[in-house]
Image 1 (cartoon, rainbow, N blue to C red):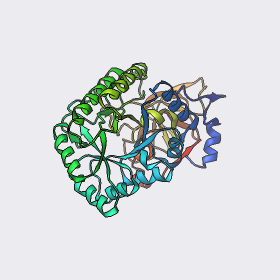
Image 2 (image 1 turned 90 degrees about the vertical axis):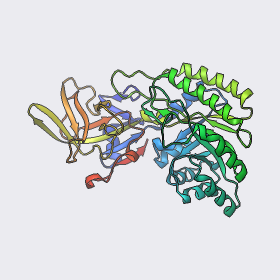
Image 3 (image 1 turned 90 degrees about the horizontal axis):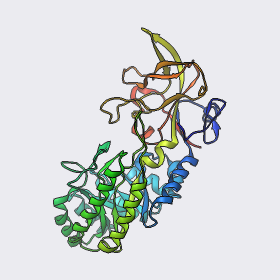
Image 4 (image 1 turned 60 degrees about the horizontal axis):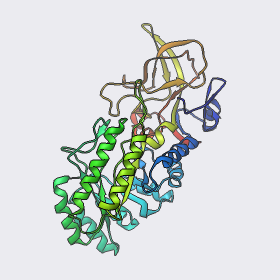
Length: 401
């Protein structure tokens, strides 16, 4: 992909030749994340975001500790979905005042941990209220809470819809006023609202529409709040192109829309901070997954490159992480980028299942045993989102370079 340079037909990641990096890592398969590309993406985003917008990293996109450590110096906060992620964020030095915890099934102990750490809890059910109240009383600490709202609207054209209609996430819009009244009576430290309508969206108009509706919703619900709204998490949804024909998200309309929302919020939600929560958009394009060709087979005229990596490490690239119709991620032979001779080949892994497919009949440079297959767009929802224990093959490693 264009974001990575090459030299003598070999991919450069973090300024290092792919073959040298593989030797440095000491094994294949591995994920490599380019810190310069991550930093450049965040700084470019900062350049066009209104200064009043707080940028948060959604840690679920990539929880690699070294990467989280890099992120905590670049963003304003981190959004989490479990106590395990809370540990990762705190270990990386993220300020608890700028951490929020979401999730539809928080365990009792997770809520106590959140209160003890002093992070903001995005409530997704009335069940959480007495648990948070008890934790506050036992620890002598005020439970910081916001309400995650399941809005009536959805993020149109999103790859994964997380709001609108029947959803396990958040509190239905119509039920929020009653919950706000209970929060006030329970004496919890109410701070605001969290609305995450969807993800992986490449249509700026859809994102702008959802952001506008989110602010409208927050203004209406603020009338029922036990105290002034301090923060409104607008969610994210910024997508990246994975497949042929997909166009890069045009961020210019988003900048203008967010600037208008900031102005509106100053009047309609005075004192409230607007938060943009992004994960995939910040890290996906900075990562590659690298596997080595173990065998080259021809079956009924079809070439198969059998590698030591596969769906157990990169479930998304295999098409088994939300795709309805399987499409190929961008793939190359990372040490043969300038090879003149190409062929149509399928890249498969070592697992005993036909689902273990990284590239289905793609035109690639002719590869041999020992060559390095690269799957691009692999910085998000990779190692941590894959069934690495499946069939007992070795785990992959991750490096930040």
